[in-house]
Amino acid sequence: MKRLAAVDLGASSGRVMAGSVGPGQLEIEEVRRFPNGAVRAAGTLYWDVLGLHREILAGLGQAHRAGPLDGIGIDSWAVDYGLLDARGNLLGNPVHYRDARTEGVLERVVRTVPERELFDVTGLQQLPFNTLYQLVSEKDRLATASTLLLIPDLLAYWLTGQAGAEHTNASTTQLYDVRARTWATGLAGRVGVPARLLPPLREPGERIGTLLPDLAAELALPELPVVAVGSHDTASAVVAVPAEPGANFAYISSGTWSLVGLELDAPELGDAALAANFTNEGGVDGTIRFLRNVMGLWVLTETLRTWSARDERAELAEVLAEAAAAPPLGAVVDVDAPAFLPPGDMPARIAAACRETGQRPPATRGELVRCIVDSLALAYRRTVRQAARLAGRTVDVVHIVGGGAHNTLLCQLTADACEVPVLAGPVEAAALGNVLVQARTLGAGLPDLAAMRELIRRTQPLRRYTPSGGDWAAAEARLHPAGVSR
Ligand code: LFR
Image 1 (cartoon, helix red, strand yellow):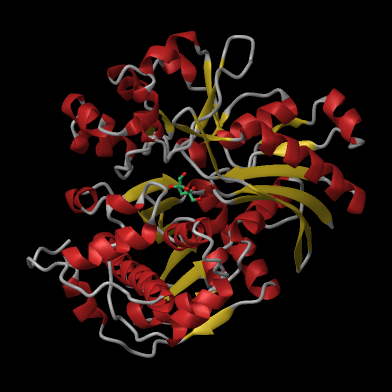
Image 2 (cartoon, rainbow, N blue to C red):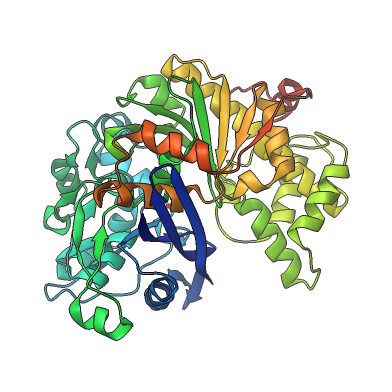
């Protein structure tokens, strides 16, 4: 048996989990959970990255006290980074991807490097917060920096003293050549990002180093190996999709974001994929995550936050029960509209979106939450179908992994909207994928993704939903009053 700590950081909370892996066995338990989120100071949205480091250290100590650990792996959201000076000190606090500093940057950059060319090299979808655009927005500060570390790589650097960039997360920067699997240094130079900032790449499964002796002593831990996993949380989550061998499956990694797509062997870089704004992110073992970001449960959590800021306390389970009882497909919105990206008053934005498309805005809390969940399921339908069409595949089953797998209303509506069965679970997919890749490196067998997925199927609770109807095509048509199709 190997006992492994998986540090899994999401946009609203972070976790240190302890996973135990042995022949035919896989168990995971939460050791420590801590809040995460944006911190606004002097108008900028930051991450509290030092707070995360402190919580990780405390969680690792706790995990080891509960049972000796054999290794550590870290995964988090993508694109964000810290800059280090030549001495390895952090230059400024990492900024949150939802900060407004990237407004208008994408539009400026594509005047120098056309979208077709950007897509050809990087295979990446255009998101205004891609690392490329964040770096261009602070170009004047880059001269003093010597290294860029993505968030999980920065946290691993603080544990081990070793700087590097793990491939799956590097592939989300839009500064990575998806075919050559190297940094796109030529592109970086053209947009004014010095190539010296980009550290050596490392494969998921590589050993990064061992815990620094002073840190190990302070935490009463051995000098444990820190292993590079699929450090992009979505890459780790896709490892844990319990797909059957040879199945025609799509996946939805459903959390703050919903990442909806397919696993491919090679990037899909055609004009249609570019027009549909699909991405080709790097997966574990050289796979490609061909997917699109759908705005996700963020819209729901921001809604709850808006209500509680007004002292209208609303518990998730309670509003979901109200939503389940509300009339289906009363009103739907395009959750991918840019209006839903920044933090703010989601109920007001949803009402405005309904009016713009000639629909009556939701009148009650239950109707509003129903509108969000219906709209998410509708976006899943649109995106799964688009992915299948673009890649020339059929989809016979949709796997929902991550927090959204808990949400029975969302899972049922996804089966209805996609018109195929949904298999929901595991909820802790990213942490499980993290643990499995470490386990392989540390000698627990599991030669390939198929073996890892088989272990997930055998050990983790999964729930099946079968389609039960609904006029989803008509709902989709309501989003395009002028007959414009996407
Ligand atoms: C999900 C995720 C997405 C990425 C977004 C921002 O947690 O990692 O894959 O597009 O966060 O980094």
